[in-house]
Image (cartoon, rainbow, N blue to C red; front, side, top):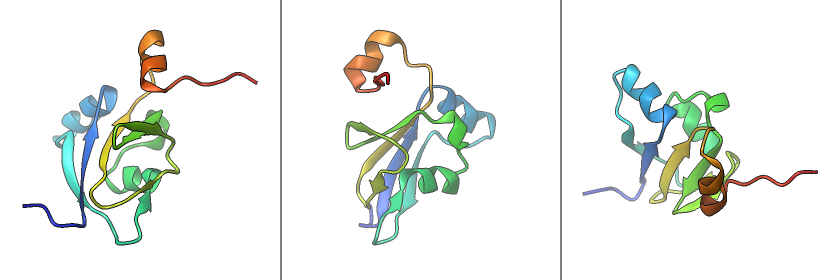
Length: 97
């Protein structure tokens, strides 16, 4: 049974490989403080290099690393390299200008 302060975090693609190479799981449960924390701070807490993260999914929506993560959120860190069509479908597209 999960406590209310626990959040499930997954790592995909090269981040999955990065964790496995270190002998770590690519799906973990992390305690989140009552006030929440930024996705970038959470990434640092679990040892992910920020330069290897393009975006974070929070509850099935894509955000940047400044997104506040709350206990109970479903979180997935995604590296750069998602192919073109999938980028649009997943909401990873960036506007020029």
